[in-house]
Image 1 (cartoon, rainbow, N blue to C red):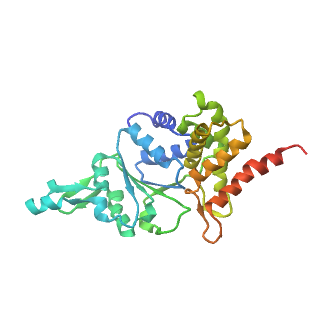
Image 2: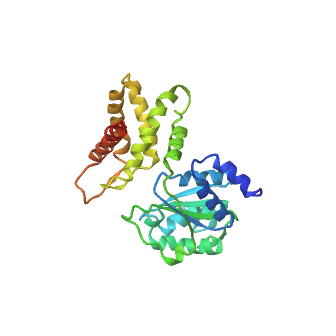
Amino acid sequence: MGESLEATRRRVAAHLVGRERELELALAAVSAGRDLVLEGPPGTSKTTMLKAITEEWGIPLVFVEGNADLTSGKLVGHHNPARVLREDYSADNFVPGPLVEAMRRGGFLYIEEFNRAPEDTLNTLLTAMADRSIEVPRVGRVEALPTFRVIASMNPFDNVGTTRLSTSVSDRLNRIVVGYQDAEAERGIVALRTGLGSGSGAAAAARIIPDAVAVTRATREHPDVRQGSSVRGAIDCTLVTHELLGLRGQDVDDEEAYRATFFDAMLVSLSGRIHVDEAVETTPERVLREIWEDHFVLEPARAEPG
């Protein structure tokens, strides 16, 4: 962290596609010593961005999954029961939880699905965020290293099983909204993650990747879908389509075969990633069929002259 923030930004940006603004905001916040909540749907490069920042700074990224089972004890740590029976309580037999680990090592404590954790568990973070230290019974005071940060993530589209953050918690967090990238950026992400953008698979990928990104993005706009797929769906759709074509001895130039194979790949890669509105009598398979028909039948027909 000793060099210029701009040099850090340039190197971290090399790991990301289409996240320049969010990266600048996140770097500015954590460099200013602030804790942060990243609010956005899954698959929008939140974790990738944090991994790149912590790797650049040479500090750990300590993951915690927010859920109803996350207690204050799990967050802070516990004394080894077997050693307690033999030795009684002591600092030596304390097993640090993710909060204490992140504080001692100067890392980012990254709590995914922050608003799924119980309110009393989140309140455990208040002292750590305010004082950069906590008092652990029978252990003593744990002081955080200067690079310690609390980073949370929340999915704004999923309110099942979530709790409303208290004012005392939200008041201590800076907030960045992380939305989906645009279509061009998502095509770049898929090409990068699949490795099909160059080499022997480049010609097929030039056809598959735009189709995979288009149908995946369409799941987010379909009226019967509560939450569509992230770019991970497009990545898997591309890979599965590519493998299916090879398995069936087909290529992208055989239009009819390609469309049928692509639909099979859509079902495999996207049907488990979209969440249909409970009030609508439909299925993920039916929704995907509509998206497939709109992309491969209706849109080409609209584009034809006359």
